[in-house]
Image (cartoon, rainbow, N blue to C red; front, side, top):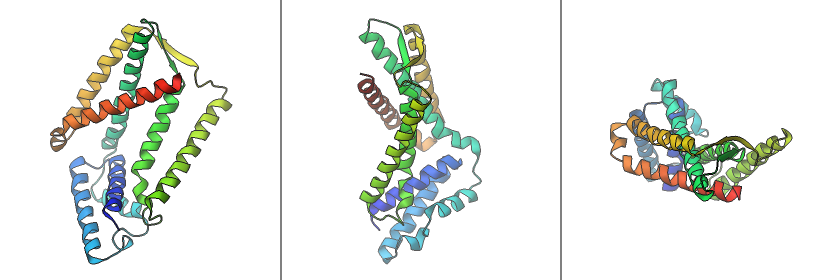
Length: 228
């Protein structure tokens, strides 16, 4: 068991606890406790299974159940994704307005399909640590994840084609005043996202915002390249 495996497993548990609606302060306590147990196991020469068992999701579920999770807390990761989506659409529309002389922006099927694939891939990558007891090497885990993502992509794109849809078909079109409103909405959502962070997380609010801006910029670039 290596430090990389420990970090990957803890990230998977944290993601699971967030989706279960465990309080952020409790998640930090549990992740620190789990890290301590795993690092002690390394020093004692124990295997990973000796600490978390063959199925780490059982351990993560048991720990979550003890904290009395609440459904409304699980909305926070979804809200984070909503902020990203709103920011990407607003900035993509702004760029296209500037490049086309304020011509109307057309939202194509490429956008929701890309958002769905990104959400699924992000979730799978964060949960990859749960496979450690069965697949020890990182190369093996990444290989399986890559296969899953490719399979999901083929299914989604195939579903769009079978439904008679065109990935470049415009299903919504608007002018620059709407884009201006979307930019204001995105800024409002980012502010709300920061206000919902815990007290300790707010200390790192600048890092959260930078990460969000980088994610929006990277997604904009991918969508721009794909649409051309």
